[in-house]
Length: 332
Image (cartoon, rainbow, N blue to C red; front, side, top):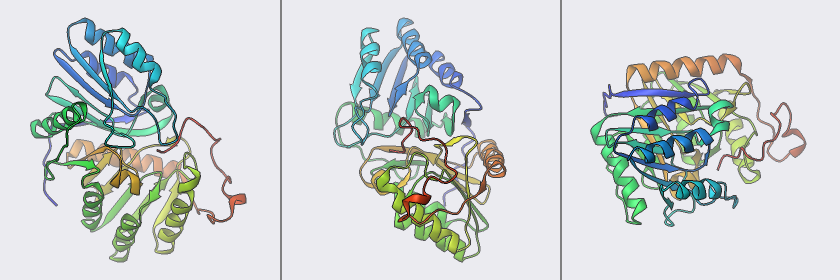
């Protein structure tokens, strides 16, 4: 594994840091903002974008037109932004869904996040974002934005610490799991990929202590329940410790390797996230970032309870101990 040595990173944790951290990033822009987002449902964020436009910043916003279930949750925001003179576009038709959550400020800083820019994700969910000032990383996020904006093909570089779908994200996730020698902490809601499942089991087989924080059924679509429950049950059989997070809705996507290396971003452990959608993640060995991630994960682990996933073929057991259903909280 390459030693990234990224000192110019800082971590954003939701709901601890709140939507104000994103507003502050937008308010700091003086020249240009590039925003690519799966879901925009926050008046505070829209107002910050409008303020940026009013002070002369060129603001471009790319919004995903519809979820995999057909929900057009961004239509109203798109209308309001256009009325405010902000340039908007739907995300590239090359992907059935753009799940990426990124923002570039003036070409010198980029936010790569697991959270949507929606009030629910600022207040109710466990989520992460990394703000980076690494020039090479920022340049590649810009290149990805410009390619999608202009409907051009984009070939990302594989060695700058970014994780792109549908380019090579499965391989990068497998690579960091393979690098674990002592501990592997995973905080993900969905487990729908046999390659990553096998890599996790291999880590446990070579003596790595593996912890998995999942969200149970909450937010998992009917078609993904079978794989997710089965994967959790298989991991437990191989000695993986599994707990269900309930004090916050679990929306984060995090892998921590040996307490010193992290990967987070928009992609679920999901075949379509790896192979079909536009997704973006980032890796970090920045001590401040990794140490805070460890503290948050440990606190969430301590709050969580041991979880035995039910038989996926026994629907009568699927609701046991679950959070109340939320039709607006689905892991796409």
